[in-house]
Image (tube, rainbow, N blue to C red):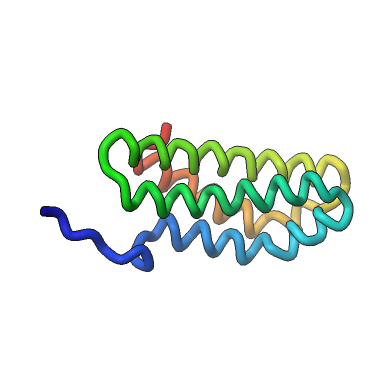
Length: 115
């Protein structure tokens, strides 16, 4: 029987939570200018963390499916940030720290099998 580490030691989940913390003010600003885009970004970022946590507690194909969903939500989050930038809601500097965390998280998801 495999012993699982507590979720607090799951680096990918921790990084997704950190990304939410860094991007929360950005999401708020986007939401003030474009409610729908801001809400979609908020849901996508939350989905990354929630699917990572669910995948961590799953096995086999279900685990991989949750990680793949997290990767899809990560892609959606990144696209939403770029769209917000294109609309002039945020600047590249506003999103740089969050994008760096999402880039690192994308690499972790790839390593977890989400390709």
